[in-house]
Length: 234
Image: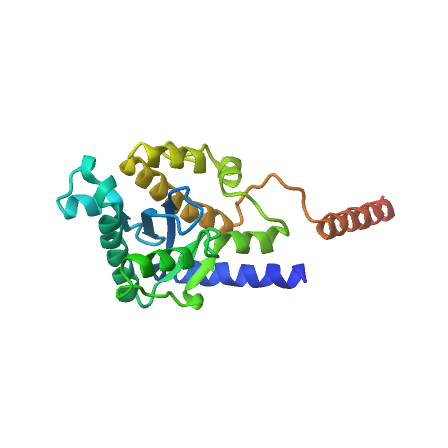
C-alpha cells in the first residue's frame, strides 16, 4: 500500500514541477473560537511567479475606510468584505490549483471558510472543487509513511522564519487587534509551503524520522549482497 501511495505522490509532484504556473499555495488564519472561528487573513502565492494575493481584516478595513480602533465593532462587516474578495478571486482563477497544508475539514480548512461565508455573505460563497485542492501534508505523509508537523518540518530544513507564529501567538495577536502581524504570519506560512514543496520536488526535503522499516530492510539486503560480492572478488 505504501509503495503505491509513494509512487502516486511522486507523480503528483512531477506534474506540479512541470506546470508550476498553474499552482498556488494557500494558507489562512482564524481566531480561537470553537464554533465557526472568524477568519482573520488568507494568503495565496503562485509557486512560479511568487505573485501574492492578500485578503485580510486590516486591508479590508482600510478599503472600507474603517479605522483600526473601530475594527472590533465592525468585524462582521469587514470579514464579509474580505471573504467576498477571496471568493471572487477563486471564481476568476479557474485554471489554478491550490496547494495547502491540512486544510481539510470544517474546523480548519476550505469548508470552514465556506461556512463562515455562508453566515456573512451567502450570495458570494464559491465552493472550490476538490480536484483543485492538493494537500501537501498528505503528499509528504505518502512519501515518508508518517505524518509530519508543519513547524517541525520547516525547522528541519532551515531556520524558522521571522514572522512565523504558532496558534497560541496568533490567538494572542488577534486578542490584541494586531491584524497586520497576523497577516504577516499567514503570508509567511503560504510562502513556506512553497519552499517545502520545492524541496520535496527536488528530493532535498529533510525530516527527523527514521526511514520506513521496509526501506531499512531493503538497504540492509543490498549491503549484505555487496559484502558477498566483495568477498568473492577478494
